[in-house]
Length: 357
Image (cartoon, rainbow, N blue to C red; front, side, top):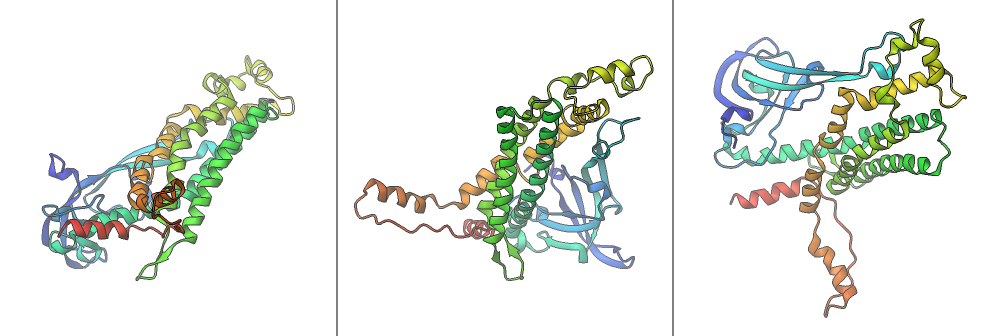
């Protein structure tokens, strides 16, 4: 528990009279606290709040889950916009990419009862499900990551291939090897997501839950490799992205001709095309927004350490070791047919329940 009880979102009062989302009087609860790292929160319709850990006796008020409109009274979004450098001459789709992060504060916010999904304050028996909700959120987030991170890697691979060609080094074997690293990561991460969906199991409510081990293996690989992919891009681009003259220098009468002359690497690309690629690389490798995107690539959906914890808590190493015992000739050990069962967060819920008895 944090020294300040308000650091986690928690219920501070129940059986409160208020106004619901439909504008009608209703009962509800008052919540207080904050959530950090909420990507895109300032421009979503609804903000959904879940617990982030397993909870037990004494945590009843923190076992809370709900959904509210993003502009609800008392919800304060400490927004951090991220964007690329502004341009005057070279308009391009990449230059217009951005997002907004948020530290979301719930400053004594009224939550109507029909928007309350988990209330351990009034119903202590449901506290045991707090961690399960956290795991299910993380699991589906990481599974979606095997798709979105693949697209991120493919964009990086496309930029790497183009800048290598602009620099006239595309045919070099070491360049092809580096680009292959990025493509390989993208394909393996996507394959893990597809395979985890193929091995999904149907839950009683009708939803299909992907395999946890494959999902986390894909997300872990992505998190471990994101900085390597940016490193490859920087290697193939060269230092010019960090020392590129200002955009205006390529258009000012006294400098335009010289800048456009000396920017060219590969004569198959015009000065403007070369400039456009290097300006994109400046955005990709040297601005604050992309620095944040690198960090997001490590921690978004859970850092590689969390994937390691999840995988190693689900994988039955004792069963796995029987294979090695047989191969080593242990007496009485027969060769097992090893088929790993699909893993889901429900196993951790069952394990947690046993600790509470």
